[in-house]
Image (cartoon, rainbow, N blue to C red; front, side, top):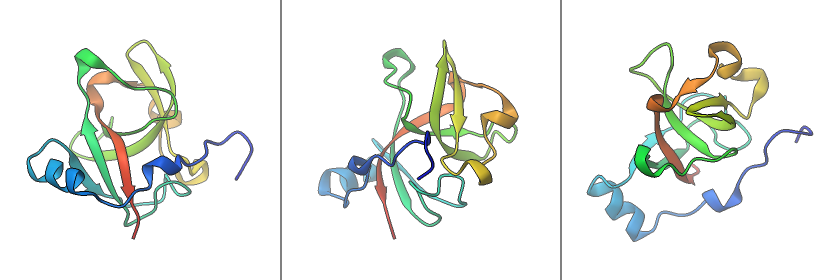
Length: 125
């Protein structure tokens, strides 16, 4: 691991439990299959992530959290990135794989309304 890069939060790596499966079925939680390697080291291509939609009135986002967001340039595309910095209601989102990530270093800060959810679990293949 390169000095200064975020470490993987091992608490996110869990086996699916009945609550998680039920939450997905009733729409309380969402899931995505990861495509790409911008978060390699934490999330790998093919992994399944479980995320909770954010509530703008009760914002629980912190530096280091992994989030799902709408791509700033292609609104129909979802991306998975880590919050690197917060500036009021704008977020610096970066991939853990700095050499292979298109992120805020290219697009600039991402507005809150593009943040879709916060990753709660990562189910590896």
